[in-house]
Image 1: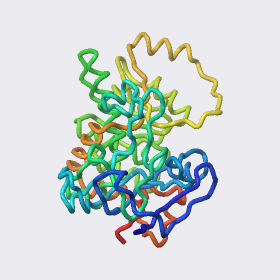
Image 2: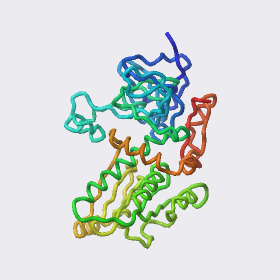
Image 3: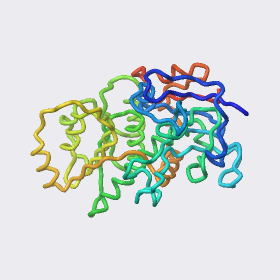
Image 4: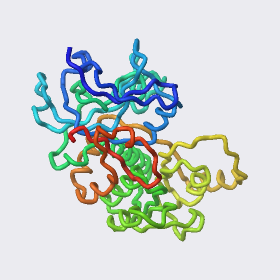
Length: 351
């Protein structure tokens, strides 16, 4: 039996992160396409799994290979879907086995019963291993230009889904949005701003950081960077994409959007915090101005493909600037340390 290196955890056990040097080679049952890992991106989800907050290993296993922001190169594909040497990313979520009405039409991002599985998170091994396998249905080929940054496809797919749903909701009436406010300049917020600029909108990004790379990254898009509270902005945007999950920001974003406006919530709040807030006034504004507030998470294959196109269209130097640390496998543990200074950290298998 051949073995690979794999970054693993014991789900539910805090600080159980381990590099296993003799993890079994992925079995053909995992998928017909065999992939050599190039890199995985790291996000807050990984850190929460490492902290033991959630995570679920595959059936019959005690440890979970983490990593859901994948980038690899095809080693073999007997189906002919991809060619040897092609860049590829693996779709994270798989539909539930029932399936629910949404999963039955390949909209597993809208799963209604929660029985879906997710690579590196829930019931499926992740991509932080030297080689992984994927079914053709869940393999997304990438333009060669994305070789340095293809691991951004997963967060970009989340943003592509958000914009897809924003535009679907907007189509309820004659709607020609001009401006968008993005709250939060992490990877999701910056990619949301990127896709907004590609739509020709006037883009405003709000974040607390006054130093570091974020202000320059926003300005490089031709967008405007703000650091004041939402309620102090002299704006009435047509769209708000909320990416912080901070309760005060969420509520102020709902109040800030203009008439017939749309607020998309992508940040997840931790809960447990009570805020003194005039809910009646918010209700009045939402109803009388025909506003919509909705949540968006994950993505289906259509959104992954949309994201691949958007990334290939983007300025590649700008995309590279989102990656503030590239960590070799020899120093894997440091990649998962939260410094507060990073935008996106990448664990580099190729090195």
